[in-house]
Each structure stands twice: as structure tokens, then as C-alpha cells.
Image (cartoon, rainbow, N blue to C red; front, side, top):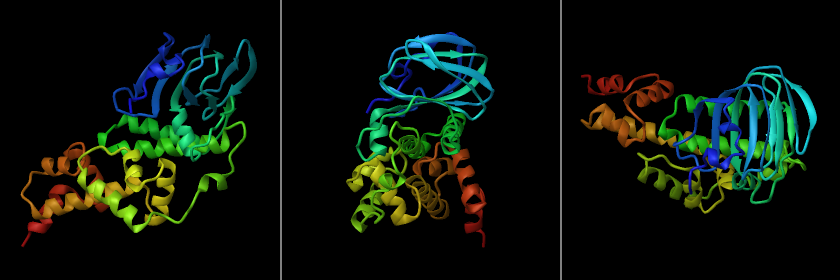
Length: 295
């Protein structure tokens, strides 16, 4: 599947009054495009896009007006406020002052998959508050700040969670949480074995969530729920644990340089492996190796 790019958005980010600081361009994200920027006051109209748009206001308050043929709604939006616009609909918008924002654009496939394949019609929202969406958007921005290719599964997980929350709380006909819960029985032994074998075979690679779901014969949304019901972990947490386990094995039982251990276990570089081991085991690769070799 091709990467989602700024060409799949409604054009706001291409305007001269927008100064992007970081984006997901070139990172291979297929159903999600994220950009963080500073915007100046403006008024403009944009055609409908193939992607759904969520904007998080990082500061403010600022007055925003929106509509279609005219500016029919106005609100003073505080920091943490959301602007939601569905795919396929034209937009006229006026920003009343300078503003720092995070934009997230999601494909309709991502939104449908979060609703088990059923269509979801997002509401046109202005200034809505949703702490979960806010935290997901901030986390995505944090991923951009310190991007590591090995975080690919994590990004897919965040995008899935964002799509599910939009379907549940920000659609024209909100979806009850029960409808999104699906079966809670968890993966079968065969499914979990297939997933684990795929991870072990591709431990050094960025692993899209859809590849793991395909190994279990499930949709992405079904897989995420059933995987956690079976293991108590998200797929990303499980993947990181397997990478940590293999790195520890190699550090203890092989003479490979630490930089090579990091590469073989799917870490972007030696410093990335060090950060993860500190977080998980409160040690470093060098200290772990020394402890094993000590008499």
C-alpha cells in the first residue's frame, strides 16, 4: 500500500501561511499522515479530500469560523480543542490569529476498519474536547520528534486507536463502545503461533500491523482487540519484548558487536537499543554483557 502524503490532504498544509516543523513524509505511513506546524491568520476555501482531517490546537484561545459556501459557525477554541472535518466535503475556514497545530489525516479505509468494515460518517466539529484524541495526537507528534523505523507497529496501533475513538465519539451517529468491542475471546493457539513466527522471522524489519493481522487471518481492528485479550499486551508491546529477549540472548551468548545486535533485533541503532534496555531492564547492553562474562 502506498504512503499517505500531503497530496492526499485538502491542501491547507500547502498554503504559504503554514510553516510545517515536522511531518510523516517519507516514513512509509500508509493510512495516516501527521504534520505539526505554525499557522498564521487566514481565510480560504478548500475542496473535499480523500482523507478525514483532525486538527489539535496546541495553543490559543483563537477564534475559528467554518462552513461550506459561507462561514456559518464561529467559536473561540481553547488549547486542546479539536477541529474535525470528514473526507469528501468542501471546507471554508477562517483562522482569527496565529496558532500552533497538529494535523492528522486518516484514510477512509482506516476509519472503516476501526468499525469492523462498516462506514462511518464523521461530524463537522469545531472546538470539541476529547482528552483521548488529544493524547493520541500528542503521542503521534512525539513519535515524529524522535522517529525510529522500529516504531512502525506502534504508529499503526496509534492510528487504529485514533480511528476507533473518532468513530465512537465524533461521528454523526456515534458508535456505541459495545459495537466496537467485538469478540473478546482472544487469538487461538494457532493464530498466536503464526503471529509469533512472523515476528521472529522479520525481527529486524519494521512490521506493519496489517501484516501481523494477516498472519492471524483477521482485520486490523479485530486483531488488535483479540491479541490483547489473549496476551494482555498490545502487538507493539509484544514485539518490543521479543526484540529485548533476543537482544539479551545475543549479548549473553554471542561475540557480535552491540551495534550488530541492535540491527539484528530490529532496533534503529545502538543508542536505541540502549534506551529500550534501560526502560525495560534498567541496564545497558554493555553492562548486561559484562555481567554475564564476569567470573
